[in-house]
Length: 200
Image (cartoon, rainbow, N blue to C red; front, side):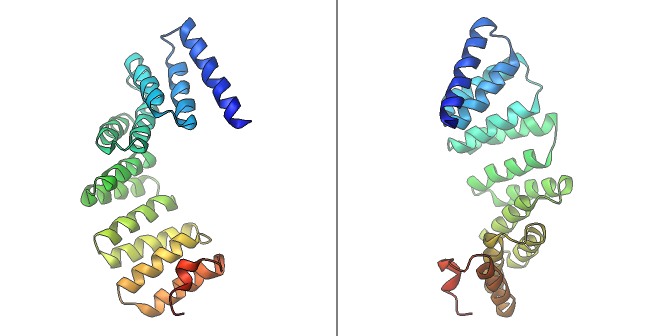
């Protein structure tokens, strides 16, 4: 039902464009609906058409970057996120930029982007989690622990955060804290076999 509604929405947007091809909102909404449908090429085309009409809307650039990330083109995503940040530097535009850098294994740039995101939105657990993951990749385990602890403070019922925190503690050779973190993960999801493999 939802898929049919989305297709109907796309058809309605396309009809609106046929009647008025300079309506930026319709191109933007067509991009949103197309991305939701998984039609990434159509989403990119729609967002780019919206940008040609009005290049000063940050959300359009941000959404275009997200689609490029999903399409496996993080380099183009970075360019789009940079434009979004130039227009309106939000926590999530910096966060999305960090993700794009991470996809390219540009970890220093990713960390910088995540840190700027945190300055704007320090209560967004997902930013702390991604920052911890990046620190973990470069084996900066004490920094990973700090980031995961903040993520766990903000979303204490997320087993993945506790599991990642346990790994960071273990890599940092703080095994007693690792056990506590793994136990928290197991308390949330006792059937998690990835956590059960550790001798608790």
